[in-house]
Image 1 (tube, helix red, strand yellow):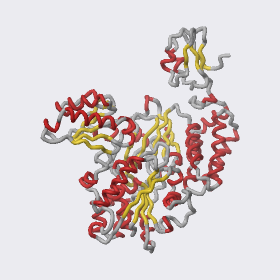
Image 2 (cartoon, helix red, strand yellow):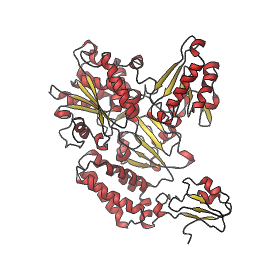
Image 3 (cartoon, helix red, strand yellow):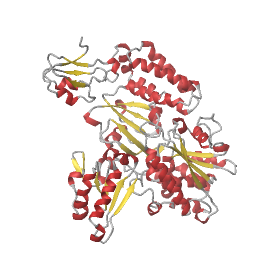
Image 4 (cartoon, helix red, strand yellow):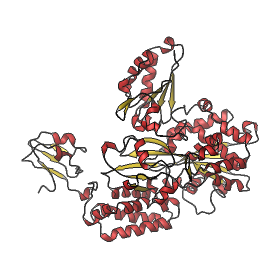
Length: 599
């Protein structure tokens, strides 16, 4: 019989959806049917990292057929075992429907076909807790090649020629950063991996750390050899317990099998890695604040220059890159800079991993070639949810900006996004539909950055607070015409005078929404209206005419917030709960529901 392998997505998203229950049930069913006695080869169960389509979890893939089952319930497992494993029959009613038809093979999902996997090449395919699995997929071959067959300068030149830019947000050329550190004449140097991913809705780095931890160790090892560093630190926030657990095991296994430690690959090169767990301060995503945290100090940014490449961790030359950047290193060394540079656009080589969320058909991780347009990204993710019109996309998280529908054909690369007034950031991609209030979006992201400000410099500490007060005033219907000018002036001041990159980028959501959606701000201020009905202070609640109500209950069935309660002779709407969506008025058969004051 054909040997089968059952892959269970065990990333954080799938675990929260019930993947462990699916695995337990699967083990029970395999044991119950005594499959080892019925078949010559044992059925293998493998826990993998994130497979990508987070809205389809829990999910499994059965190989070699590559059959994909998603949105599983424990009760589905018995059917899969009895039909698919025992009788070789695909359970069609458990297949995912994609674009109107059932998809049998994972790779044929539209969500997967539109991607190009480089960073995520192993995640969802290998067991992240298994060094053997990583080695079977050419793990540590690139490190062996770099350390035994290449000169240090040759490695740096290869990374420079690849065009790889730092994936943490700023997009600084990776090879150039390594070159600066390599030039420093110091005995002690360090390599640091920035895994402090704090953007709302971002989980790209977390998924790589969970699903392919050895690739990060290997990338750091190559960097260490190239710049002359023998020690590396991986900094991960405490909110990522699975990533921490998988990293700890990967480090232990690499040490025990000689992939970390002394005389690597029978050379005189030594390299060790330690894990540091951060408390979750957003500012520690800024590299100098992160280095201070590793040193045991308060995580606050430092003045630059000197840059970490010259004086970083414990005042020694330090290479610091984020998780995604290091994940690219082994495959660049393995396949060559020319191969990597041919992917993407001029000035933005390779791919970028995005956490796609918001008003979109399929949420999850999308790894797309640089230069993919916003429209193509949305198509990969199944289009705008509910058949609604696309309004904008927020790229780059709280430090990024909003791109409107008129620029839907904008290619996603560093230069194009900068010209549009936003940044790549770490990879947040939040799709917003026609019902989204852009003033409220700006307020949401500014509220986050204001709350997370370290408070070191007055422009960020006080400027963002004053901006937030103005936005709060506008969304409550208390805005004045001069507020928009004041808001813009404050945003530019904070942008130009804040101490670190996080403070400098914090006004981006405000400036971009003012640029592209000024008419919405003006409606809030001048007409005291929220065009989308999001800002409750500017929207009148609905009410039910007690005399006209026939208590049919249709309104209660469609109310999304349970604002309608029943009485003996009539129904009533709680004005404090009502979001004025109007669904109740649309279904009322006697037109007893209206918007406005019931007095």
